[in-house]
Length: 101
Image (cartoon, rainbow, N blue to C red; front, top):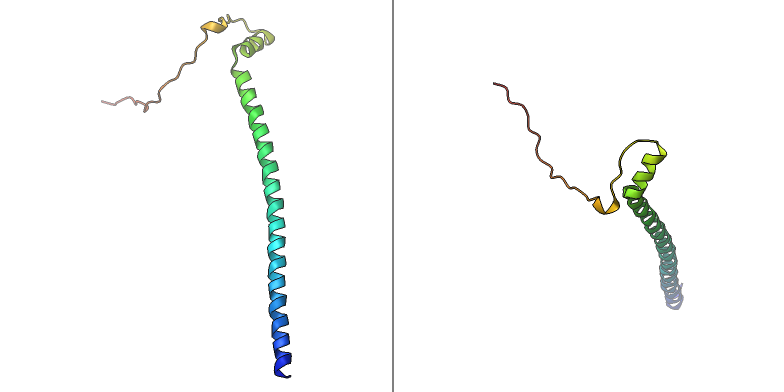
């Protein structure tokens, strides 16, 4: 092989490697876009599910729901007016044990 032929082969190899690198970057960019789209879709599903769960939690705590469940199950219990109901928060304390003499 002559020197000019070696240069042509070397240039062709370098250009081929650069083209392969460019194609690799483009493929990775497209794959990243697909992964991002899938994650956005999953996020939207989770946000919708969270909204439904928060709504259900709110409904389950509502005095009207509790009153309707009492009536439906035929339990005799006086239900307070909605304006009278309040939430109570308890502080957690360490358990106290009986002391032996």
